[in-house]
Length: 411
Image 1: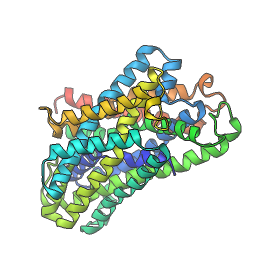
Image 2: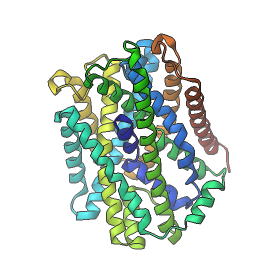
Image 3: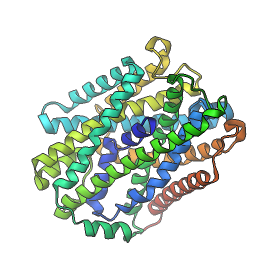
């Protein structure tokens, strides 16, 4: 297990936990179906991301900058930087609030410490060791499986809601679907997994980009598929359990307005007991520590490849100064956002929806470049993956358009 596992696990970040908690609290089990619906779409688009990196030896930004107009690659990377930094700030704020719930103390100090610890670990830890740490942090996700079995869940009702969901044309419903899609299918995940394939190829003895070593393709694609589909399954199963836990406790007790992941943890203390609260809050911190480096790292990879810098977590800091400077700067700005008047509550939910909007042009560009033989040589996408990739892109586009329409058209 490698890039797919870490990518899938990092999808359930504190911002995502807040989104899933709000969905469960507000709609009960009514939107649980979205986690099953998005799984094949998410897995397909992430497999495409991984194939781009493994085949070409460059990440998504590197391929865009080499084969597409500068305004397109620059615009996509600029949007990615904005969403990642907002996400960083929101996740750091959620982690600080969660630790404050557990041990009291100043949450802004905890935000600073989390930011410093994450950036230092990413910059100064040897790559192989660092990846190992990220893999172990994936275990923090199982805190949400534990939570679901600590509370009473009417599984028959859950099953009915998943099989026969009650759809709605209300703006809140459409916005919630976009938020879920934006959390499960996020642009930073595309960039991260593609780059980790490039990193792993450099680390493995004898491995080369598939356009130069086509004989390695069969084994590489089999590993990517298994790794990616298991990693995305982990991501969506955990998200499903978060929705179920908050629906069975908060929604069932009339608590429908959850704004942050720490709000959800605090509410659980009253309705589900202190142990459930503590497990839920600890999970926020663990998933945050996993996701912070993915957010800052994917931003640094994208900007570095766009500007043709030396990039890579396997490089020593002095050999990739600009790359690591972006990691440090993005984390610092994320910390700084928590000291401004920006409402972290709104930042959490809006970052998920912004991810959904930004994902559309990124997915269109990825689908186009992955089907060009001039870029992918003999490894353009097979027909089933083409179909699923375009379905994912169309679904994301239609959902975003539907959200905009619900804003503009009176109910």
